[in-house]
Structures are given as C-alpha cells and as structure tokens.
Image 1 (spheres, one colour):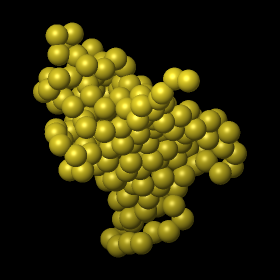
Image 2 (tube, one colour):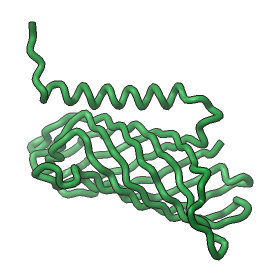
Image 3 (cartoon, rainbow, N blue to C red):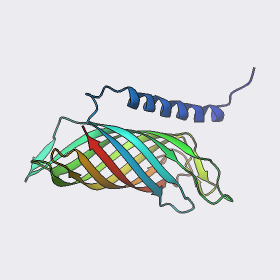
Image 4 (cartoon, one colour):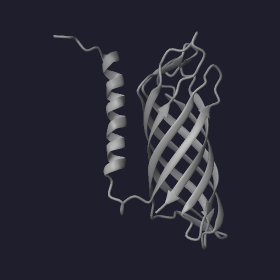
Length: 195
C-alpha cells in the first residue's frame, strides 16, 4: 500500500476544489446566474512572469446598503476558475502551471438610473485555492489557500447594461498565516456579460 503524504495530498485537494467550482459553474441553472466573466492578466510581482486567465460566474446581491446623490453601493458573488501559466525564469522556477478556484464577495459603487454608459469602482476580498504553493524560489506563497484583495474600475455599457469592461489590480497572499509571505500581485482586464 502506497503512503500518501500530506504535501502530496494538498495539490489534489486544490485540483478537486477547482474541479468542483468548474462543475458548479457548468451546472448552475441559468436563471440563478446573473452573468459570465472572462478575465486575462499578468503578474506584476518581481521574479515572476505569470499570465493568468480566468472564467467565472456572478450572482448579484439584491441589497443596496447605501444610496445617495444618484449613486448606490451594491455587490455580487464572483466564483471563478483560473489557469496560471508559469513563464518565470527557468533557473528559479519551482512550479509548473497552476490551477485556481476562487470565491470573492465584491462591493461595487455605481450610478443609479438607466444603463448605457456608467462607470463603477469595486473592491473585494476572497479566498483562492491553488494547485501549487510556489512559483519561483523567490516567490514561495507558503500555502495552497490564499486570500485575495481586489480593486477595480470599469464601465457598464449597452442598452440594458449587459456589457462590462473593467481593469483590476489584485494581491494574493496567505494573510500572514505562514512564512514566508511575499504574496503575488496581478493586473487584469475583465469582460463581463450580464444576462
């Protein structure tokens, strides 16, 4: 009988989590989902060269906790799966490509009224499960589960506000739970279609 070590089991747990999120994305009833997102970006952290691609689903919140001066604060649940292509220098590269699954509640400030051409700003903090815990010898994330903070701006377009284009900056780290904790920074462009 082959002994499975904890370290070997963790990547399979992250891969299983990513598979479960993907299955949920594909199996979710269309009437429950408010939109679909495609995202492409790249790491901006030193000693990393990691393009990132994600696809996700969004569920808008019905509540609007703040409204004043023609603007309101709303939010949504962002569930995504991603693929990180590790193109870092081969001399310091540790991991191959990574798979990611994430859940991020996001707050958004946007104008009231008819859609058409509306700017927005958004921020969120979520949880990310990765299939690996290191990118390079100088970028050890120290865990498969990371916390991600995101700040974004964008425009909602279309007669019904069905299209969005946005720019995001994101920081992922283990939140200081383990050392080292250099984290990784990402920038990305997002396209969203609202059903």
